[in-house]
Each structure stands twice: as structure tokens, then as C-alpha cells.
Length: 58
Image 1 (cartoon, one colour):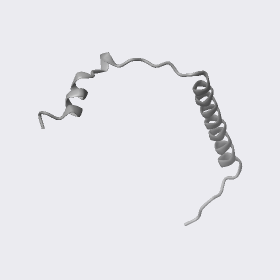
Image 2 (tube, one colour):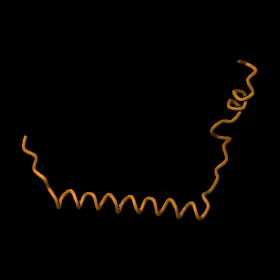
Image 3 (cartoon, helix red, strand yellow):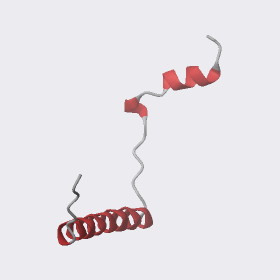
Image 4 (spheres, helix red, strand yellow):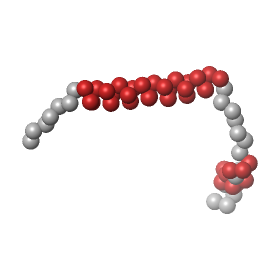
């Protein structure tokens, strides 16, 4: 498929040619909230696991 225009276009666009697009303020807030909620949820789950230890006897 030497004449495939999609493959030709992909070859022309290299990593150096790609343009950096800065995040919009709403996107920055979403990223911040997502990371914050993830950290809080992780801390909560760790606290739960240490608070309610269950011994399993086989």
C-alpha cells in the first residue's frame, strides 16, 4: 500500500513536529480534583485495611 494517504501522512508527522497544546483551566481543575480524590480514596482504603484486620485461618 505505497499509495495509502493515511500512511504517508503518518510518516510526515514526526514527534518533533507535533504541537504542544496547553490545558485549559477547566481541564487543569479536573486533573487536580481527580488526583486529589484518588489520594484521599487510597488513604481511606489503607486506613480501613489497618483498622479492620481479619485473620483468615485455612
